[in-house]
Image 1 (cartoon, rainbow, N blue to C red):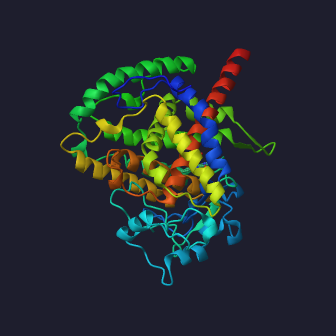
Image 2: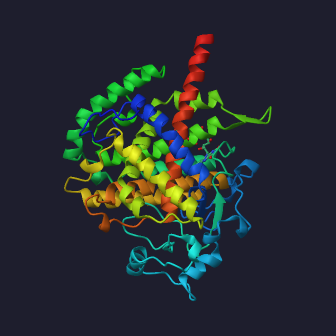
Image 3: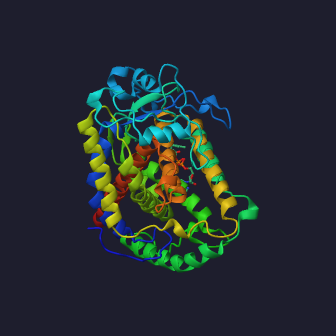
Length: 443
Ligand code: FAD
């Protein structure tokens, strides 16, 4: 049950698929409970409609299908009271102002008890707005009272097949993958990364071959992305995150697919075969993302311990925190599956990290170019989730928690829901695998 120790000193997500599957079976109920039963994690506030695509203009690629639409919450009464504009305004005082960093820190240390009414119990902290922290990997969603945005119930708007496809969708994916083309001068191997990678490379190949056999895939596959060439570890991580996110989206749309003939929703095995089964490197990148995000949640434990989960219902807030901490503990007690400490070690690390961060921010900006509201919602949430994971992995210092950048509510919600998406995708992939194996037996 996830307690087996493996491959210490491993710098990648080098656990075998079966280790990660076992871990997922163990963690899945906790992740599901967190995202599906708590108000805190099931409402997300974002600016879905008012941001223009910063890279190109193409009205023709908008998706008009009903499945592309998002039900936003029109009526404020449906949102927990504490997040309504009126209440957020109250928190910020008569003249709504952006609290500066010092003030925010003081508020976190000396919470605004009483301002929300005694019944709230734990105090609630004003979200700071979209002022960028230089350590962010994402363009943040602004949840402050003055910001434009809508609350969305993530439960009422599941990620599934929408019919959004064609040149518009391809243009977005192309733009995202182009971000992976780091400046040529940087394309050289970092000695530390290479050192760790050469050992890892053989391990990855072995376990992927092993897994390939288990999945019934051609075991001669080595994976484009596994070629060392002159790419350093950091750039390969960037690619794997994006490709793994793409694989997760593909899995969800194939798993919850609309059969246009019968009008029913359900798994589409052909869709899975074409997009995932025949591309084992995409599946591998999804497992990689699972390891990466799990490690981020475990690393954020101290911050989450100090975090005020605030939905206006003190009992539910206490239960939410308990669920979060119990999940982080379960992950921490599990195997070492990702060790980020060997990254960013060589001389050009600072420059490379800035580049990495800027490129990931661009990926998050590209989400405003997605011409399908439902896809934009989940695209934004997942880039924010991965951005938060990267921020925790690369900017948090476990030995000096006070120096860590604060986490916004939108970031915490995005992180856990992204973990839920990956975890659900892994379960779906295993089901698909069973269906394909069943087809083989009957053939
Ligand atoms: P696409 O998935 O569009 O892929 C384009 C090309 O990228 C492929 O030809 C292949 O060369 C490469 N590629 C594909 N997968 C990977 C991978 N994992 N790693 C590396 N390279 C890869 N549609 C829905 O139905 N529901 C959604 O919720 C949804 N969300 C979306 C969110 C975003 C941000 C975007 C950009 C699109 C979304 N779409 C969604 C559309 C969906 O992702 C596909 O674009 C669409 O279904 C068309 O698929 P396709 O087979 O043409 O290939």
